[in-house]
Length: 453
Image 1 (cartoon, rainbow, N blue to C red):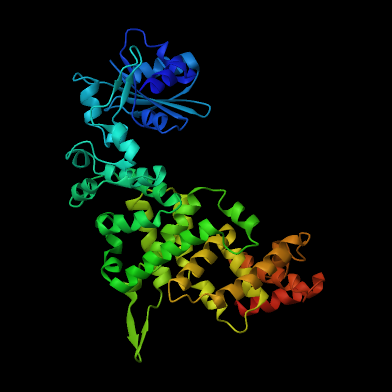
Image 2 (cartoon, rainbow, N blue to C red):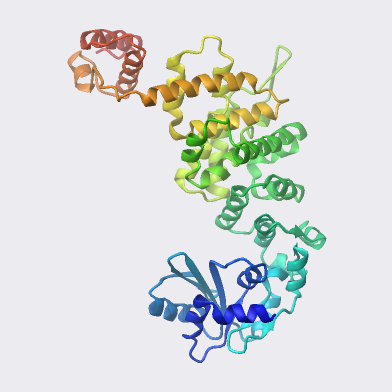
């Protein structure tokens, strides 16, 4: 490991911390060592230190003027961030560094370099597994001690392009995640789903029964072989669209939509659970199967999943809820022989930024249902053409405002928004261009809405 020692002794970020060690034993450990061995330039530096890891991190943050974050007070773990570089510190327990390495999650993360002597420590033969590109638990107990390591193993396999050792699946098979914090599960799942080629890992996670543990709301869906198979295939189709591009000439809209990184995972998750309410809405009427309201009920179910099971932010929860609730709207629009520009504008207005995700999920849903997508593609192109045409036009000044509606004798309330929007639609369609015409149309709309005093 001569090259490793040379790298460590020359790395400015490592040496910057080493110079502050005082009387502490200091080790560079974990994923940092793995990355260096693989020839990857680290952005995160992991250190184990004798004494208090948090106190040492405080000292480092003051000296290098970095931001300090205490990650886990009980585990004595803290982080210092300076620019793009992250330094993680954890205090060694009384048993020393070798015992610490042997208790880590996977052999590829159980290596260290003593920064005083440059001695390389590899008690679990992690170097061998790095070369073989294998993820292997350090001990049979490691996954039991922290069941979240099961999901971390899948994430590492995706990130590094490694294979999971057969022992991983044997050990993970009967370990419950039900007592693991929802925030930690949500974070790992989002990281997995955000990555390319995650579908294979999702299938393996499913085979271990993990989804049934962490998503009790969806157990009925998972127990229906056909529905769950369709849902998994929809996930795969969404991922395919994201990785290959959704229609060749939508690069601009694609880049804008996925500028928010969480949207990749949210679209895949919406694809997985778009039919979550079908088992509860199953109905046979006149010999035909129906799932009335499964989109609306499903939206409420994924809201519970997002907030309770994954601890999503309010913003991400609303995106997921919207994508599930609206996944049938595009199927209905695409099969409507009398699809109007007004209906199309209403769709874009209602979905706001998430029209792009909604189209992807509708297409993936159709593709996973026997490849039924041609009607959707025709409708999408017409809708997108209108969307671009409208966006290219100068902003239209409204002919009528709320004060004008009050002057007509209308009572202010929620209907005002609907009246004003319908007037704007008429204006965009070229059906009204003068204020008197707009006022007359407003009265007609209001009469239909029973909003006149």
